[in-house]
Image (cartoon, rainbow, N blue to C red; front, side, top):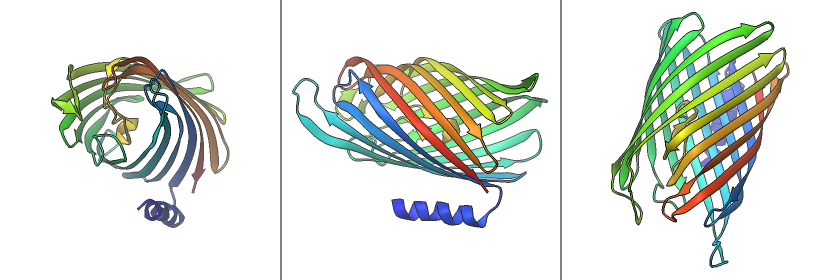
Length: 281
């Protein structure tokens, strides 16, 4: 299935203009986790777009090394694949509609074979100012998750610097009683965040943060989901990149702090450093 998906991406990118293909490789590092030590993550994304349509296809592959921190024994590695798709239809210059889907394959977690469905709308209120509303339904074996997103974005310039600032709010409700053997104590979560992107000549800069507890969160406008029972309370993101004629390179860093709920493990840090290569057709 993985090889088939890669083949589809390559063939699609060779057929259609107005396309980009992204490859990302990253390293993960965990601190104070009960079992997770470190790992790697790989992403491939294909995007086709024109004035009326945008289609994105993606695959994420994670491999995490594990060792029990108390018993000091090696454990089987965690292997995850996530397949995602998103379609945006621009009705006009003001209004666009979105649908998205994610499929999860996980060799250890109770959320294996989970599916995430998304619907959304984006409305350009004024020139350079827009708002979006999104709903995501995560369908897992023993529970479901409903997520409601609202965001406001503003595009503006300061001298030769182009900027985009966004504020985001996410409401997450769990419908169900347990994640494997773990019984949910809290089922309602709310988190807010800010993002800032800047372009100057051929250089890009990005920064973002989320505050407030969240769990099983859908991110990246419907293309990513955190499907383990990890209650995050702080997230920081940073990126810097350089654009060339048909090629971009971006370095990324993210930091998350939270609690592993089944293990009752507080103050667990997750750090990811990654490099992205984007080719434009």
